[in-house]
Length: 294
Length: 187
Image 1 (cartoon, one colour):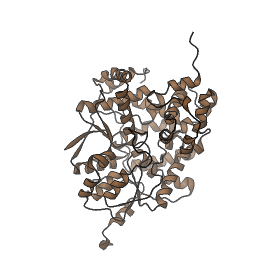
Image 2: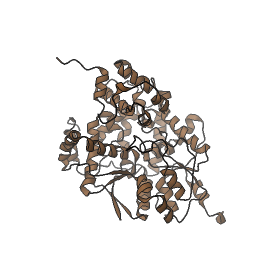
Image 3: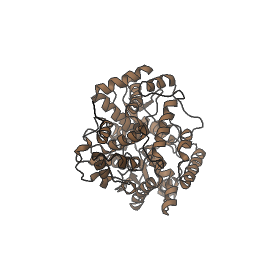
Protein backbone atom coordinates (compact mmCIF):
# COMPACT_ATOMS: atom_id res chain seq x y z
CA UNK A 1 0.00 0.00 0.00
CA UNK A 2 1.27 3.44 -0.97
CA UNK A 3 0.46 6.22 1.44
CA UNK A 4 0.30 9.97 0.81
CA UNK A 5 -0.36 12.95 3.03
CA UNK A 6 -3.60 14.33 1.66
CA UNK A 7 -4.23 18.07 1.65
CA UNK A 8 -7.94 18.43 0.84
CA UNK A 9 -8.00 22.24 0.90
CA UNK A 10 -10.93 24.41 1.97
CA UNK A 11 -13.19 23.65 -1.02
CA UNK A 12 -13.21 19.91 -0.52
CA UNK A 13 -14.54 20.14 3.01
CA UNK A 14 -18.00 21.02 1.77
CA UNK A 15 -18.32 22.81 -1.58
CA UNK A 16 -16.52 20.02 -3.44
CA UNK A 17 -17.44 17.14 -1.14
CA UNK A 18 -18.12 14.93 -4.18
CA UNK A 19 -14.48 15.38 -5.22
CA UNK A 20 -13.34 14.45 -1.70
CA UNK A 21 -15.53 11.33 -1.56
CA UNK A 22 -14.69 10.12 -5.04
CA UNK A 23 -10.96 10.76 -4.52
CA UNK A 24 -10.90 8.53 -1.44
CA UNK A 25 -13.10 5.83 -3.02
CA UNK A 26 -11.17 5.56 -6.28
CA UNK A 27 -7.64 5.68 -4.85
CA UNK A 28 -8.46 2.91 -2.35
CA UNK A 29 -9.27 0.58 -5.28
CA UNK A 30 -5.62 0.93 -6.31
CA UNK A 31 -4.30 0.34 -2.80
CA UNK A 32 -3.42 3.96 -2.25
CA UNK A 33 -4.14 5.58 1.08
CA UNK A 34 -4.78 9.31 1.31
CA UNK A 35 -4.14 10.22 4.93
CA UNK A 36 -5.57 13.66 5.67
CA UNK A 37 -2.98 16.09 6.96
CA UNK A 38 -3.66 16.85 10.62
CA UNK A 39 -4.57 20.49 11.31
CA UNK A 40 -3.79 21.81 7.83
CA UNK A 41 -4.43 25.48 7.01
CA UNK A 42 -5.72 27.24 3.89
CA UNK A 43 -3.15 27.40 1.07
CA UNK A 44 -4.12 31.00 0.29
CA UNK A 45 -5.23 30.38 -3.28
CA UNK A 46 -4.19 33.51 -5.16
CA UNK A 47 -5.16 35.98 -2.43
CA UNK A 48 -2.15 35.67 -0.05
CA UNK A 49 0.20 36.20 -2.97
CA UNK A 50 -1.63 39.42 -3.84
CA UNK A 51 -0.81 40.77 -0.40
CA UNK A 52 2.53 39.41 0.75
CA UNK A 53 4.69 36.77 -0.87
CA UNK A 54 6.68 35.85 2.22
CA UNK A 55 3.52 35.38 4.28
CA UNK A 56 2.01 33.32 1.46
CA UNK A 57 5.02 31.02 1.29
CA UNK A 58 5.07 30.66 5.09
CA UNK A 59 1.44 29.58 5.26
CA UNK A 60 1.98 27.06 2.48
CA UNK A 61 5.20 25.85 4.13
CA UNK A 62 3.30 25.01 7.31
CA UNK A 63 1.31 22.38 5.39
CA UNK A 64 4.47 21.06 3.76
CA UNK A 65 6.12 20.80 7.18
CA UNK A 66 3.13 18.87 8.53
CA UNK A 67 3.52 16.35 5.70
CA UNK A 68 7.27 16.12 6.18
CA UNK A 69 6.74 15.37 9.88
CA UNK A 70 4.70 12.33 8.83
CA UNK A 71 7.45 11.35 6.37
CA UNK A 72 4.99 11.40 3.49
CA UNK A 73 4.71 13.04 0.08
CA UNK A 74 1.85 15.48 -0.32
CA UNK A 75 -1.15 15.11 -2.63
CA UNK A 76 -3.49 18.00 -3.36
CA UNK A 77 -6.70 17.53 -5.38
CA UNK A 78 -7.10 21.28 -6.03
CA UNK A 79 -4.97 22.87 -8.74
CA UNK A 80 -4.40 26.12 -6.82
CA UNK A 81 -3.39 24.27 -3.63
CA UNK A 82 -1.12 22.05 -5.73
CA UNK A 83 0.58 24.94 -7.52
CA UNK A 84 1.19 26.79 -4.27
CA UNK A 85 2.54 23.73 -2.47
CA UNK A 86 4.72 22.67 -5.40
CA UNK A 87 6.35 26.04 -5.93
CA UNK A 88 6.79 26.96 -2.29
CA UNK A 89 8.55 23.63 -1.83
CA UNK A 90 10.75 24.32 -4.87
CA UNK A 91 11.66 27.85 -3.68
CA UNK A 92 12.56 26.62 -0.21
CA UNK A 93 14.77 23.96 -1.76
CA UNK A 94 16.58 26.52 -3.94
CA UNK A 95 16.82 29.40 -1.51
CA UNK A 96 18.40 28.77 1.90
CA UNK A 97 17.78 32.38 3.03
CA UNK A 98 14.08 32.09 2.34
CA UNK A 99 14.01 28.69 4.06
CA UNK A 100 15.75 30.08 7.13
CA UNK A 101 13.33 32.99 7.40
CA UNK A 102 10.29 30.76 7.02
CA UNK A 103 11.58 28.10 9.41
CA UNK A 104 12.10 30.85 11.99
CA UNK A 105 8.35 31.51 11.80
CA UNK A 106 7.39 27.81 11.67
CA UNK A 107 9.17 27.32 15.04
CA UNK A 108 6.12 28.92 16.66
CA UNK A 109 4.18 25.78 15.77
CA UNK A 110 7.12 23.42 16.52
CA UNK A 111 7.56 22.75 12.83
CA UNK A 112 10.30 22.99 10.27
CA UNK A 113 10.54 22.22 6.60
CA UNK A 114 13.64 20.76 4.97
CA UNK A 115 12.17 20.39 1.48
CA UNK A 116 12.08 16.59 1.72
CA UNK A 117 8.42 16.25 0.74
CA UNK A 118 7.48 15.90 -2.91
CA UNK A 119 4.21 17.46 -4.05
CA UNK A 120 1.73 15.86 -6.45
CA UNK A 121 -1.64 16.75 -7.87
CA UNK A 122 -4.25 14.00 -7.46
CA UNK A 123 -4.46 13.56 -11.23
CA UNK A 124 -0.70 12.83 -11.31
CA UNK A 125 -1.31 9.95 -8.92
CA UNK A 126 -3.71 8.47 -11.48
CA UNK A 127 -1.63 9.38 -14.53
CA UNK A 128 1.83 8.36 -13.24
CA UNK A 129 1.71 6.36 -9.98
CA UNK A 130 -1.25 4.19 -11.09
CA UNK A 131 -1.14 4.74 -14.86
CA UNK A 132 -3.79 4.14 -17.55
CA UNK A 133 -2.93 0.44 -17.91
CA UNK A 134 -3.70 -0.37 -14.28
CA UNK A 135 -6.82 1.80 -14.37
CA UNK A 136 -8.02 -0.19 -17.38
CA UNK A 137 -7.48 -3.49 -15.58
CA UNK A 138 -9.85 -2.45 -12.78
CA UNK A 139 -12.63 -1.10 -15.01
CA UNK A 140 -15.82 -3.13 -14.67
CA UNK A 141 -18.26 -0.68 -16.29
CA UNK A 142 -16.52 0.96 -19.24
CA UNK A 143 -18.19 4.32 -19.96
CA UNK A 144 -18.90 3.34 -23.56
CA UNK A 145 -20.45 5.97 -25.78
CA UNK A 146 -19.76 8.81 -23.36
CA UNK A 147 -17.82 11.76 -24.73
CA UNK A 148 -15.81 13.37 -21.92
CA UNK A 149 -14.04 16.70 -22.42
CA UNK A 150 -10.71 16.71 -20.55
CA UNK A 151 -10.41 20.11 -18.92
CA UNK A 152 -6.89 20.67 -17.63
CA UNK A 153 -7.31 24.35 -16.78
CA UNK A 154 -4.25 26.29 -15.69
CA UNK A 155 -2.42 25.48 -12.56
CA UNK A 156 -1.88 21.72 -13.05
CA UNK A 157 0.23 22.46 -16.11
CA UNK A 158 1.37 26.02 -15.47
CA UNK A 159 3.80 27.47 -14.47
CA UNK A 160 6.09 24.91 -16.11
CA UNK A 161 7.81 22.40 -13.82
CA UNK A 162 11.06 20.67 -14.82
CA UNK A 163 10.64 21.18 -18.56
CA UNK A 164 7.23 19.40 -18.62
CA UNK A 165 4.96 19.55 -21.68
CA UNK A 166 2.74 22.60 -21.18
CA UNK A 167 1.27 23.10 -24.65
CA UNK A 168 0.07 19.59 -25.46
CA UNK A 169 -0.29 17.31 -22.42
CA UNK A 170 -2.08 13.97 -23.01
CA UNK A 171 -2.44 12.29 -19.62
CA UNK A 172 -6.04 13.42 -19.03
CA UNK A 173 -7.07 12.02 -22.42
CA UNK A 174 -5.28 8.74 -21.61
CA UNK A 175 -7.23 8.40 -18.35
CA UNK A 176 -10.53 9.02 -20.19
CA UNK A 177 -9.69 6.39 -22.81
CA UNK A 178 -8.67 3.95 -20.07
CA UNK A 179 -12.15 4.10 -18.53
CA UNK A 180 -13.73 3.22 -21.88
CA UNK A 181 -15.05 6.67 -22.74
CA UNK A 182 -14.26 8.85 -25.71
CA UNK A 183 -12.06 11.87 -25.11
CA UNK A 184 -13.70 14.91 -26.70
CA UNK A 185 -11.54 17.02 -29.01
CA UNK A 186 -11.42 20.09 -26.79
CA UNK A 187 -9.09 22.77 -28.12
CA UNK A 188 -9.76 25.10 -25.18
CA UNK A 189 -8.77 22.47 -22.60
CA UNK A 190 -5.80 24.55 -21.38
CA UNK A 191 -7.65 27.87 -21.31
CA UNK A 192 -8.35 29.58 -17.99
CA UNK A 193 -11.84 29.28 -16.38
CA UNK A 194 -11.49 32.75 -14.88
CA UNK A 195 -10.48 31.56 -11.42
CA UNK A 196 -11.32 34.07 -8.71
CA UNK A 197 -12.21 36.70 -11.33
CA UNK A 198 -15.73 35.26 -11.08
CA UNK A 199 -15.92 37.16 -7.76
CA UNK A 200 -13.99 40.25 -8.68
CA UNK A 201 -14.46 40.87 -12.43
CA UNK A 202 -17.72 39.17 -13.31
CA UNK A 203 -18.27 39.80 -17.02
CA UNK A 204 -14.75 38.86 -18.19
CA UNK A 205 -14.97 35.69 -16.10
CA UNK A 206 -18.39 34.73 -17.53
CA UNK A 207 -17.00 35.25 -21.02
CA UNK A 208 -14.12 32.90 -20.19
CA UNK A 209 -16.58 30.25 -18.98
CA UNK A 210 -18.72 30.77 -22.09
CA UNK A 211 -15.78 30.08 -24.39
CA UNK A 212 -15.02 26.80 -22.61
CA UNK A 213 -18.64 25.63 -22.62
CA UNK A 214 -19.04 26.54 -26.30
CA UNK A 215 -15.91 24.65 -27.30
CA UNK A 216 -16.91 21.51 -25.36
CA UNK A 217 -20.52 21.52 -26.55
CA UNK A 218 -19.64 22.21 -30.18
CA UNK A 219 -17.35 19.20 -30.19
CA UNK A 220 -20.02 16.89 -28.80
CA UNK A 221 -19.05 16.57 -25.14
CA UNK A 222 -21.61 14.94 -22.84
CA UNK A 223 -19.72 16.17 -19.80
CA UNK A 224 -16.65 18.20 -18.90
CA UNK A 225 -14.26 16.47 -16.50
CA UNK A 226 -12.34 18.77 -14.17
CA UNK A 227 -9.49 18.26 -11.74
CA UNK A 228 -10.01 21.46 -9.72
CA UNK A 229 -12.84 22.60 -7.43
CA UNK A 230 -12.62 26.21 -8.59
CA UNK A 231 -12.90 25.24 -12.28
CA UNK A 232 -15.85 23.03 -11.34
CA UNK A 233 -17.68 25.83 -9.50
CA UNK A 234 -17.07 28.36 -12.27
CA UNK A 235 -18.21 26.02 -15.04
CA UNK A 236 -21.19 24.57 -13.21
CA UNK A 237 -22.56 27.10 -10.75
CA UNK A 238 -22.17 30.03 -13.12
CA UNK A 239 -23.61 28.26 -16.17
CA UNK A 240 -26.95 29.94 -15.46
CA UNK A 241 -25.30 33.34 -15.21
CA UNK A 242 -23.56 32.69 -18.55
CA UNK A 243 -26.90 31.76 -20.12
CA UNK A 244 -28.42 34.98 -18.77
CA UNK A 245 -25.54 37.17 -19.85
CA UNK A 246 -25.11 35.80 -23.37
CA UNK A 247 -28.54 34.31 -24.17
CA UNK A 248 -27.06 30.81 -24.46
CA UNK A 249 -28.73 27.56 -23.36
CA UNK A 250 -25.99 25.46 -21.81
CA UNK A 251 -26.91 22.44 -19.68
CA UNK A 252 -23.55 20.72 -19.65
CA UNK A 253 -22.77 18.55 -16.60
CA UNK A 254 -19.40 19.32 -14.98
CA UNK A 255 -17.96 16.44 -12.97
CA UNK A 256 -14.71 15.61 -11.21
CA UNK A 257 -12.52 13.16 -13.09
CA UNK A 258 -12.52 10.92 -10.01
CA UNK A 259 -16.33 10.65 -10.17
CA UNK A 260 -16.08 9.39 -13.76
CA UNK A 261 -13.26 6.96 -12.93
CA UNK A 262 -15.36 5.77 -9.99
CA UNK A 263 -18.36 5.00 -12.20
CA UNK A 264 -16.14 2.95 -14.51
CA UNK A 265 -14.76 1.06 -11.49
CA UNK A 266 -18.32 0.11 -10.53
CA UNK A 267 -18.50 2.30 -7.42
CA UNK A 268 -22.04 3.47 -6.62
CA UNK A 269 -23.09 7.01 -7.57
CA UNK A 270 -23.90 7.73 -3.94
CA UNK A 271 -20.41 6.83 -2.73
CA UNK A 272 -18.98 9.10 -5.42
CA UNK A 273 -20.93 12.05 -4.10
CA UNK A 274 -23.43 12.35 -6.94
CA UNK A 275 -26.71 14.10 -6.19
CA UNK A 276 -25.54 17.64 -5.40
CA UNK A 277 -25.09 18.84 -8.98
CA UNK A 278 -26.52 22.22 -9.95
CA UNK A 279 -26.53 21.08 -13.59
CA UNK A 280 -28.15 17.64 -13.61
CA UNK A 281 -25.93 14.63 -14.36
CA UNK A 282 -28.98 12.50 -15.27
CA UNK A 283 -28.37 12.61 -19.06
CA UNK A 284 -25.04 10.87 -18.41
CA UNK A 285 -26.62 8.02 -16.47
CA UNK A 286 -29.28 7.67 -19.17
CA UNK A 287 -26.56 7.32 -21.77
CA UNK A 288 -24.68 4.76 -19.70
CA UNK A 289 -27.68 2.48 -19.07
CA UNK A 290 -27.26 -0.95 -20.68
CA UNK A 291 -28.80 -0.83 -24.15
CA UNK A 292 -31.26 -3.68 -23.42
CA UNK A 293 -32.74 -1.66 -20.53
CA UNK A 294 -33.67 1.20 -22.86
CA UNK B 1 22.92 59.46 0.21
CA UNK B 2 20.90 56.68 -1.37
CA UNK B 3 18.60 57.92 -4.08
CA UNK B 4 14.94 56.94 -4.24
CA UNK B 5 14.51 53.80 -6.36
CA UNK B 6 12.66 54.15 -9.66
CA UNK B 7 9.20 52.64 -10.02
CA UNK B 8 10.50 49.88 -12.27
CA UNK B 9 13.15 49.05 -9.66
CA UNK B 10 10.49 48.97 -6.93
CA UNK B 11 8.37 46.52 -8.94
CA UNK B 12 11.45 44.41 -9.66
CA UNK B 13 12.16 44.31 -5.94
CA UNK B 14 8.67 42.95 -5.33
CA UNK B 15 9.35 40.08 -7.71
CA UNK B 16 10.88 37.07 -6.05
CA UNK B 17 14.28 36.36 -7.62
CA UNK B 18 13.44 32.74 -8.46
CA UNK B 19 10.65 33.89 -10.80
CA UNK B 20 12.54 34.21 -14.08
CA UNK B 21 14.30 37.07 -15.85
CA UNK B 22 14.06 40.75 -14.87
CA UNK B 23 11.34 42.81 -16.58
CA UNK B 24 13.86 45.00 -18.38
CA UNK B 25 14.71 41.99 -20.56
CA UNK B 26 11.27 42.38 -22.22
CA UNK B 27 11.53 42.55 -26.03
CA UNK B 28 7.97 43.88 -26.48
CA UNK B 29 6.97 40.99 -28.77
CA UNK B 30 3.36 40.84 -27.54
CA UNK B 31 3.15 37.06 -27.09
CA UNK B 32 1.72 37.70 -23.62
CA UNK B 33 -1.05 39.96 -24.94
CA UNK B 34 -1.87 37.49 -27.71
CA UNK B 35 -2.13 34.67 -25.17
CA UNK B 36 -4.01 36.45 -22.37
CA UNK B 37 -7.65 35.26 -22.01
CA UNK B 38 -8.70 38.51 -20.29
CA UNK B 39 -6.90 40.96 -22.58
CA UNK B 40 -10.13 42.24 -24.21
CA UNK B 41 -11.25 43.62 -20.85
CA UNK B 42 -7.97 45.24 -19.83
CA UNK B 43 -7.31 48.99 -20.12
CA UNK B 44 -3.77 48.22 -21.26
CA UNK B 45 -2.45 44.93 -22.63
CA UNK B 46 0.18 43.03 -20.61
CA UNK B 47 2.84 43.96 -23.19
CA UNK B 48 2.04 47.65 -22.87
CA UNK B 49 1.91 47.44 -19.07
CA UNK B 50 5.42 45.98 -18.95
CA UNK B 51 6.62 48.70 -21.33
CA UNK B 52 5.01 51.31 -19.10
CA UNK B 53 6.68 49.88 -15.98
CA UNK B 54 10.05 49.93 -17.72
CA UNK B 55 9.40 53.57 -18.70
CA UNK B 56 8.61 54.36 -15.02
CA UNK B 57 5.10 55.60 -15.87
CA UNK B 58 4.04 54.86 -12.31
CA UNK B 59 0.68 56.65 -12.10
CA UNK B 60 -0.45 55.43 -15.51
CA UNK B 61 0.44 51.84 -14.58
CA UNK B 62 -1.38 51.97 -11.26
CA UNK B 63 -4.46 53.55 -12.87
CA UNK B 64 -5.04 50.56 -15.13
CA UNK B 65 -7.26 47.61 -14.28
CA UNK B 66 -4.80 45.32 -16.07
CA UNK B 67 -3.02 43.78 -13.10
CA UNK B 68 -6.20 43.24 -11.06
CA UNK B 69 -7.87 41.60 -14.07
CA UNK B 70 -5.06 39.02 -14.34
CA UNK B 71 -6.54 35.61 -13.48
CA UNK B 72 -3.11 34.08 -12.70
CA UNK B 73 -3.43 31.45 -15.43
CA UNK B 74 0.32 31.71 -16.25
CA UNK B 75 -0.26 31.20 -19.97
CA UNK B 76 1.83 34.30 -20.74
CA UNK B 77 4.54 33.15 -18.33
CA UNK B 78 5.11 29.79 -20.02
CA UNK B 79 5.18 31.34 -23.49
CA UNK B 80 7.37 34.41 -22.85
CA UNK B 81 10.45 34.09 -25.10
CA UNK B 82 12.41 36.36 -22.72
CA UNK B 83 11.46 34.06 -19.81
CA UNK B 84 9.82 36.77 -17.74
CA UNK B 85 7.24 35.55 -15.22
CA UNK B 86 4.57 37.96 -16.41
CA UNK B 87 1.85 36.65 -14.07
CA UNK B 88 4.44 37.18 -11.32
CA UNK B 89 4.86 40.80 -12.46
CA UNK B 90 1.08 41.25 -12.17
CA UNK B 91 1.28 39.89 -8.61
CA UNK B 92 4.07 42.34 -7.84
CA UNK B 93 2.01 45.32 -9.06
CA UNK B 94 -1.00 44.03 -7.09
CA UNK B 95 1.11 43.94 -3.92
CA UNK B 96 2.47 47.41 -4.66
CA UNK B 97 -1.05 48.77 -5.10
CA UNK B 98 -2.31 47.15 -1.89
CA UNK B 99 0.58 48.29 0.30
CA UNK B 100 0.42 51.81 -1.15
CA UNK B 101 -3.39 51.93 -1.43
CA UNK B 102 -3.15 53.15 -5.02
CA UNK B 103 -5.69 50.90 -6.74
CA UNK B 104 -8.85 52.48 -8.11
CA UNK B 105 -11.94 52.28 -5.91
CA UNK B 106 -14.18 50.49 -8.38
CA UNK B 107 -12.07 47.31 -8.31
CA UNK B 108 -13.36 44.41 -6.20
CA UNK B 109 -10.09 42.44 -6.46
CA UNK B 110 -8.03 44.20 -3.76
CA UNK B 111 -10.91 44.22 -1.26
CA UNK B 112 -11.47 40.53 -1.87
CA UNK B 113 -7.79 39.64 -1.40
CA UNK B 114 -7.40 41.71 1.76
CA UNK B 115 -10.58 40.22 3.24
CA UNK B 116 -9.33 36.74 2.43
CA UNK B 117 -5.98 37.25 4.12
CA UNK B 118 -7.61 38.76 7.24
CA UNK B 119 -9.97 35.77 7.41
CA UNK B 120 -7.10 33.29 7.19
CA UNK B 121 -4.98 35.06 9.78
CA UNK B 122 -7.93 34.74 12.20
CA UNK B 123 -9.06 31.15 11.60
CA UNK B 124 -6.57 29.40 9.33
CA UNK B 125 -9.32 28.27 6.95
CA UNK B 126 -11.53 29.89 4.35
CA UNK B 127 -15.30 30.20 4.87
CA UNK B 128 -17.49 31.81 2.21
CA UNK B 129 -20.25 33.26 4.49
CA UNK B 130 -17.61 35.36 6.31
CA UNK B 131 -15.89 36.39 3.13
CA UNK B 132 -18.97 37.29 1.09
CA UNK B 133 -20.22 40.39 2.97
CA UNK B 134 -16.81 42.04 2.65
CA UNK B 135 -17.00 42.30 -1.13
CA UNK B 136 -20.66 41.58 -2.02
CA UNK B 137 -21.70 45.19 -1.58
CA UNK B 138 -19.09 46.31 -4.05
CA UNK B 139 -20.68 44.19 -6.77
CA UNK B 140 -23.21 45.57 -9.24
CA UNK B 141 -26.90 44.73 -8.71
CA UNK B 142 -26.90 41.95 -11.27
CA UNK B 143 -23.80 40.28 -9.84
CA UNK B 144 -25.21 40.66 -6.33
CA UNK B 145 -28.39 38.82 -7.33
CA UNK B 146 -26.38 36.12 -9.12
CA UNK B 147 -24.28 35.60 -5.98
CA UNK B 148 -27.30 35.47 -3.65
CA UNK B 149 -29.07 33.06 -5.99
CA UNK B 150 -26.05 30.78 -6.28
CA UNK B 151 -25.44 30.88 -2.52
CA UNK B 152 -29.01 29.83 -1.75
CA UNK B 153 -28.81 26.93 -4.20
CA UNK B 154 -25.52 25.81 -2.66
CA UNK B 155 -26.94 25.95 0.86
CA UNK B 156 -29.86 23.79 -0.31
CA UNK B 157 -27.49 21.23 -1.80
CA UNK B 158 -25.46 21.20 1.43
CA UNK B 159 -22.43 22.73 -0.24
CA UNK B 160 -21.79 25.40 2.39
CA UNK B 161 -20.95 24.41 5.97
CA UNK B 162 -23.04 25.84 8.80
CA UNK B 163 -20.13 26.70 11.10
CA UNK B 164 -16.87 28.35 10.12
CA UNK B 165 -13.95 25.88 10.22
CA UNK B 166 -10.92 26.67 12.39
CA UNK B 167 -7.55 25.05 12.73
CA UNK B 168 -6.75 23.50 16.13
CA UNK B 169 -3.44 25.14 17.01
CA UNK B 170 -4.67 28.62 16.21
CA UNK B 171 -2.49 30.45 18.79
CA UNK B 172 0.70 28.94 17.39
CA UNK B 173 -0.54 29.77 13.91
CA UNK B 174 -1.13 33.42 14.78
CA UNK B 175 2.28 33.71 16.45
CA UNK B 176 3.84 32.25 13.33
CA UNK B 177 2.16 34.92 11.19
CA UNK B 178 3.30 37.65 13.60
CA UNK B 179 6.89 36.67 12.90
CA UNK B 180 6.30 37.51 9.24
CA UNK B 181 3.99 40.54 9.26
CA UNK B 182 2.77 42.80 12.06
CA UNK B 183 -0.87 42.17 13.01
CA UNK B 184 -3.17 44.60 14.81
CA UNK B 185 -4.77 43.76 18.16
CA UNK B 186 -8.13 42.96 16.54
CA UNK B 187 -6.58 40.03 14.70
